[in-house]
Length: 426
Image (cartoon, rainbow, N blue to C red; front, top):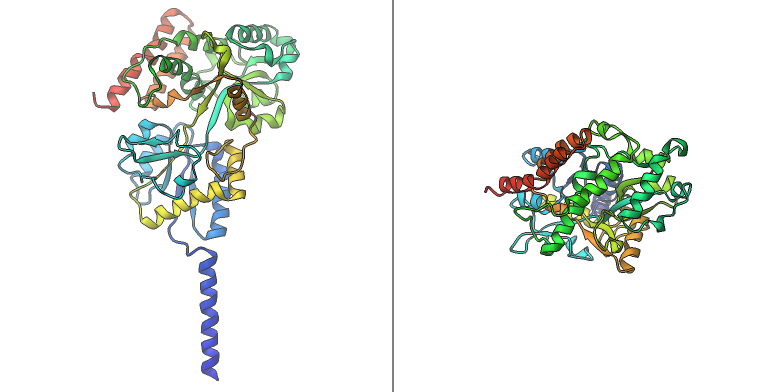
C-alpha cells in the first residue's frame, strides 16, 4: 500500500515538473538586447518582463546613452557575455560585424517579414540584418499656430511658400507668443536631425542623378548643398533659439513643439504619439528646399534600426533570441506595444499602425509624390563623419559667412571621401 502511495506521489511530481516545463516551453538559453533607441527602453523592459513570465526565458535590456551606442557595442561584443541581439543602423556598420553576425536566411523571424526591400546583406546573399521598424520623417507642423497668422498647411507646397510662412511667423513671434522652428541643436542628443536626417536631402537628390546607391560611393559632389543650405538657414534663422546658441544644446525641441512655442519641428514618425497627444491635428510636410518639381516630394522613408543576431554565441541563446524576436512581431499584446512606440513594423502578423505621419506619407505616395529613401545610411564611418559636420556647422552658426560655409562643404564632401578611404583601407 505504501509503495502505491510512493508511486502515486512520484507520478504527481513528474506531472508537476512536466507541466512546469510545458508552461515555459522547455525554456533554454537567454536573450541580451543592446538597444539603440533610448525612447524604446521603458517599453522593452516591460516586454522583457512579459516574455519572462510567459516563457521563463530571461531577456536583458541595455540602452547606452545617446551618441555612445557604437562604442558600447564594440565594448560589449568583447565581453564574456556579449549581446545576443544588437542593432546596426546602416550597411557599413553591418559590414563591420559581418563575420560575427548570424545569417538570418530561413529563420522563423525572417519568414515573418512582409518586405525584403530594406534588408542588409552581403555580396553573396547572406542576410545580416532586418528592419524591426520602418519610419518616415520630415517637418512636423502645428496647423493651429499657422491659422493664427492666416495660413494653412495646404498653402505650403514648396520652399518658396514655406519660407514665406516661416519668416512671417518669426517676424511676429514677440506678439504671437510662439516662433517658427523648434531649436535644431547641435549636441549629441539632437545633432542627428541636421547631420543625418536633413543631410539626406543632399544625398538623396545626388543619388537620383546616378541611380539608387547599393553601397556607399567613394565620393560625393555636394551638387545639392545649396538646397541643404536653403532649409538649414531657414531653420536656424527662424527658431526659438538663436543660431549661435545651438552648439551647446540642452534645449528640448519636443517640449517646444508640444507646448506651442514653435510651429515647425524636424522630426519623424517615432515622435507621433507624443506630439499628437498635445497637438491632435499635427501633420507633416516634406523637406522643401528649392528643388525643381519638389511640389511632388514626399517624406523621407526608411529605417536605421536593423536587428542583427550574434553568430558567435551558444546555439540555445541564438534560438532563444530568434524566438523572442518572432514573439515581438506576432504576439498581439507585444506587437501592439512595439508598434505604439516605433510606428510600424514590417511583419505580416504585427499590429497595424495608426501613426498619422506614416498615414501622411501613404497619402502623398497615393497622390503621385515620390518617396525620399534614406541615402544617409551610406555615410561612411558615420559617427566620425557627423562629428566633423557638427564642428563645421557650429562655426557657421556663429559666423554665417561664405568662408564658414566653405568649411561646411568640406565637411560634407571632402570628409566623405576621407572617411570612405579610412573604412575601406584606401
